[in-house]
Length: 466
Ligand code: FAD
Image (cartoon, protein in one colour):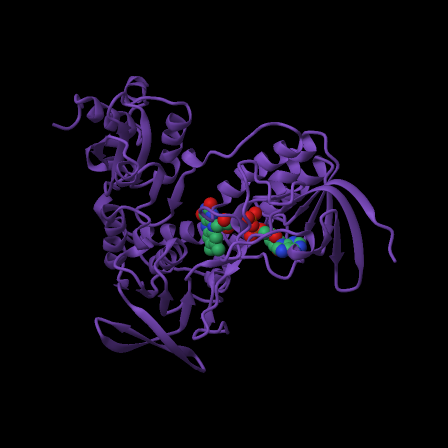
């Protein structure tokens, strides 16, 4: 018998989807409450994007400190104090989650700590360990994210870990087996391989990322991982694990043979499932697809007109910037704007060695849709900046529509691909042609010139390759 608290818009989950939606809704004049059962920032800031990038950056520092002999630099006794690395990583996370709190408060969003449960399509109960409070709302935005899938044959424990465990290991493992060569497995594998761990990746399909990136891109990544001493077993089927006091024995099948491998830990990164169970969605009448995802329309609205869903719990790539993008759309839709989702400009990035990035169509996807395209490539090795960085592995591929040269996609494998992809996303969003990119003066010497040069290749008259 508590008194319900009334609000205009209630947001459930404060990850990159939810906190962005809450801020935008508040900016547009709504009275907003955000409910979070864990820590502000969600998976991305606490146990995802940010801490993984911090570990990857630290791994690179260590590796380049040891591997710069070609540039005339050698260092002795380069050491890693891993607890310091972890402490630093934690400080980065803390700064950002504290920042999110400040932003929410600055926008007058009410922050409520607890677990939300739907009573009906206008009512939520928020539970903490010691209390429960009812909220009534006009509109709700569900942004509860996802969690690692647990395989029945690999129950999580001290030694059988998921991405969260892998981000907070107390020491650098000597040996690490990773089940699943997707984005998360490859990124964490790269970080630890750079720290000196012997990494083995067991991937179920024929290549890393299971075909999500073009073969030429994924094979650059596997070649580099192997250079770091990693082993990659493709078409491998993980069977089971035996835990010992100080490690694990993982059995798997590859090429019709059963094998086993010892390691300190086994990291399972085989996908993430949406957090759409155990929150009373059925009581609000919200329908789920068979994979537990929530179906939405172009404005992120569920089948219940005043309830919206965004981020990892709806279809599409599980990416932070997709969640944030959808968050803005949902907040604007609630405010009566006719904003609609258009996924064409959503980039996908892997922070591997080298980095991979893709936006818009690949050549193959365009062909599948019957779009006549031309592809133009330019190698990093022909770029002065890449050479002066001693980092020349990779290429940029520009996909343009044949009839008019419209930029409809780009793929990059190479240093700073994660930053370079932004210009290509802009080109797609702005409806630019290869000529527009070629006519844009890029500073010299920069990696950005690679984009300009690929556009010149598309036009048939590149300066720096023949
Ligand atoms: P989440 O970030 O999962 O947030 C959901 C929040 O809802 C959580 O805080 C949760 O506690 C809360 N919640 C759940 N249920 C309830 C409830 N009933 N009541 C109250 N609160 C609830 N993406 C990228 O774009 N780039 C990257 O580099 C990247 N790296 C990653 C690395 C790792 C290791 C992992 C695991 C993920 C990575 N991702 C990356 C993916 C990214 O983290 C997710 O796509 C993103 O966090 C999804 O945002 P979201 O808002 O949908 O949900």
